[in-house]
Image 1 (spheres, one colour):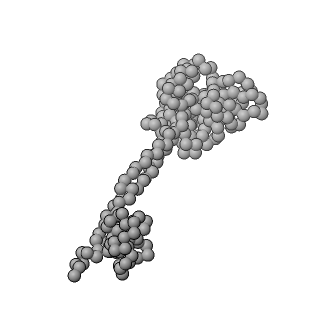
Image 2 (cartoon, one colour):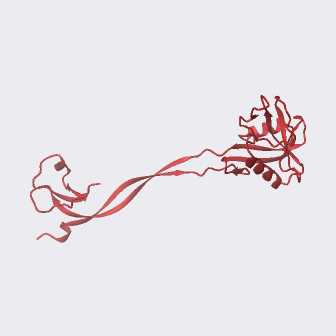
Image 3 (cartoon, helix red, strand yellow):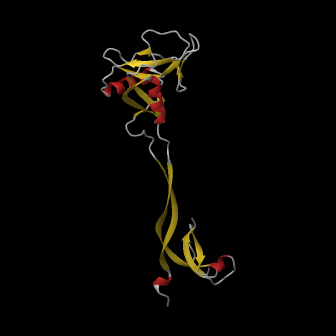
Length: 218
């Protein structure tokens, strides 16, 4: 008489699971993220000419900031105010305008009709722009001599590139299996299982008396 162990067994079924992990979009250390445009900003307290400040920004992967709306202007203004600088003015980018009704073009390739000049200067030539941060200034702009060597600055750059990491790991699950036969016996598998013969050659060859184990179809 066959024992109970002849009719059931526990199989470990191993599947490979692939997990995609996306790193959070972030800014480099000491840079501040502005959520509205997913850009990073940094105040440089060192006093430089406009060209020196721009070179410093480029070395850090950015440009002197070009501002396209009131929200961004207020963000930059509050960021500079929180830096507690000794100077009351900072460098922004260079600005030009092709005609009276044209948008303002920043040297970082951004463009907008928005401006924060107290007195709009009508000029088609490129001008170095500063932001006043003294109390009562509220982030207003002023063209200034580019060679002036006394302003801190604000850099703007893109967030760190999103990285995707693929992690492949095995997943082990247990299955209680019963005995079965390929054709000439009464031991049948449930509908969601299939009979896998002990002799795998019987998968392709006709083995009327072959026995096996019931395993999941998927």
